[in-house]
Image (cartoon, rainbow, N blue to C red; front, side, top):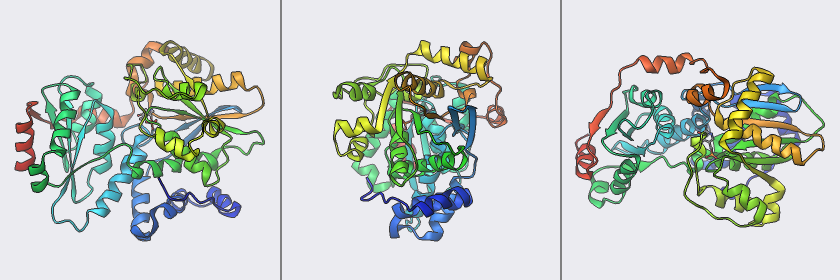
Length: 403
Ligand SMILES: *Cc1c(COP(=O)(O)O)cnc(C)c1O
């Protein structure tokens, strides 16, 4: 956690609306970076990492969608992964050995991390994924890159991949001979840049006299935690909605005061299938560990898969808007909030993934697959470069030592 989250002056907040976006992102993150990262490096990190737009789509005066999926892997994780990768590149600059980032993926994390680190010097990425258990679109997004990204196709399951990575970290001999690390999703370097798009919303939203409610499709709750950081520096947010799927341990906590982590259940919004959200302690800390403060800041709603399909269909029919299942869960959270809070408010829903990444579920909801963006289509054409490997630890270790 940051030691301090300083509130910015009204003048500075006003400048956040006017200055170029890169400049504003730099100003937002600078106090958190402190003296460890020189200004010119931080500027370079911000300007290289945040090189794609954040689009605000207003479906009605009360419902705005903030599209965070215009980065290279078509999901909001690009903000965090690209920023953290460049920052890590800076911190390992004086190492003589290259740093190897090990990632086990069941689909989506692999591509955000791989693209984040692509071309960052001094770092190579080794991604392990279970053979034949992920979609072709997911596989092609991180196995076709080359350069400093190596994909290992493991004959086994995702659990095997995770076991191999964990074993590598606890192997003293390997750690002496190779410089390895993870790209953990709770890394603060991934959270801080997620404040940027709250600023982007603040810049683009029409000035309204009614309170702003921000609905965040949530799994590990990094996205919502960053939203509270953004509010603490002064951005006007009345309340957040923790919008989850059936994995609703946080909405349940907000209702009952009891927090019961449990095994994740599979749903249509699978990037949010998290039964034990690892940023929950951060949320509590931000709210002084008191239930009533958490409730003042966040309202919660857990949606079912059926509701998710229905709202995807109705968004398409009413507005011609195609939402991915995660974004749809966000819309459901806002609608549920509004149902219980009739006073005037405007809702902002974070759109966390491009619908084409979940084409089969979109097709189920609206009767047709969404158009494939050029970027995704281009990957599908490229040859897969992964290397096959068994699920035996010794083979993996040999690979790491030989490369
Ligand atoms: C990771 C992810 C989420 C959840 O974000 P958290 O910060 O883990 O709460 C939501 N939607 C999509 C598409 C994601 O990839």
